[in-house]
Image (cartoon, rainbow, N blue to C red):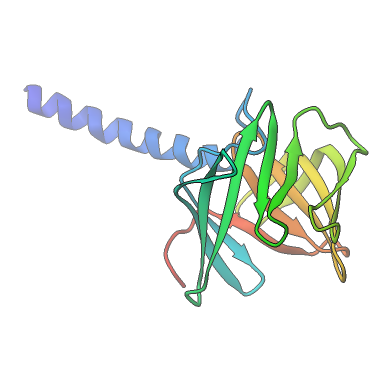
Length: 185
């Protein structure tokens, strides 16, 4: 009898667990950061390719400890991303310049602009109420950061508690988004 009750409980609870997990992919997390550095792994689609971004450890540079992410592309290439948080500011270590670029400061408001360490890129907070439709979700209340680079401008979208969600080009075409589908294509 106990085995039957346990079995029935599992049958009813597993779908609920799966649904909650699936919903969290598209839902906003309350009281969380736009750049949580605790997400272990994400699959990110970019144009006709994709990459997995995952935490691989920490690295100490100039007495500061960074979380190291590996971005492992479909073709096997790997890039490294070094991020750290201090007092509500997310910093990225830039190997080119041996210094940091601010990725986001929780005190920034709409209209705030800043430059990358190499002065080749400019970022501006466009909105905290952005919307983005991907093949998987219809997101709202997103942080939108405009990134102006040498030859292209992108809009980057971030969800509280989850971080990066997607990117559009200057014509508002979706060129990148996170994916809940982990099987390799």
